[in-house]
Length: 289
Image (cartoon, rainbow, N blue to C red; front, side, top):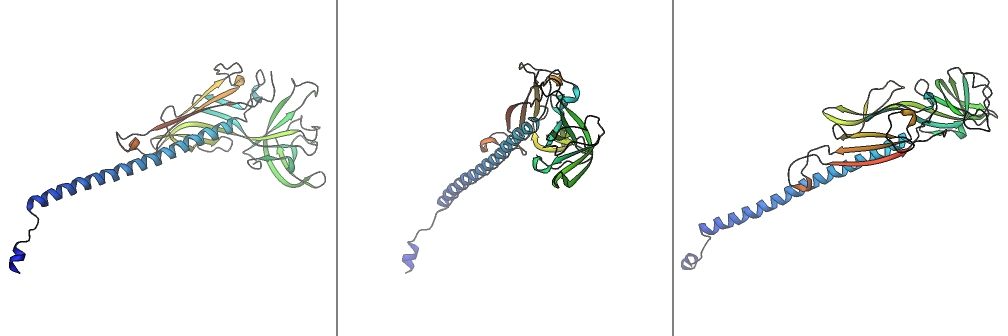
């Protein structure tokens, strides 16, 4: 029995050391694989968030600007582009559309049929204004136009003929209101501003209601500093223009970057990958030259 136990061999020190070396190599490889996988997963998550962010900007901004109206050769008051710059635009943002349910009897009141009204929300006094379409001579279009009026009061209820539901707008006085035809188009709007601005050391696309006196709030981001939001303005011939009454289309560039620094592909240097989307919108023109 003792002889049998003495003849059994254990692991030598060299074998143990070799095993430890092999185990260390295997564990190191597993750790490196897990670490790379984690980095890759994080980079992919940031990339997906970045692409979603840029796509959102390329949908929201064109949707907002597509309703703008500019009149070539028209009066300044008929143009929805109020201030324009390469990374900033102030404009009349359309919020609703409807038709008069009766001819106005006063210079300060409009009644809109509830059935004809559609939009983001009901008009808000003090925040919104209204465009009233003035037809002029029905046989020609050259004297047509939209007249802007500040909304000072809003009431709802069965205010239209036949006790039908409607919206009553009290506005600034205008001698053009009495006698307007039933079903005259009206559009409600508020003055908005979109701008590239910096906050907390990063660049964002900001939005604010100028009419309501709001401060700039981040709409999306982070964007690339300096050129994350770019606007280019073109006239009817496709040439760049700085004349806001001549703008026919706007090219919008949204260039975003990841929120956190990552290693693209799970390896390489830490950085913030960028994505860019470019879109162009034709503005809505009520009156053609």
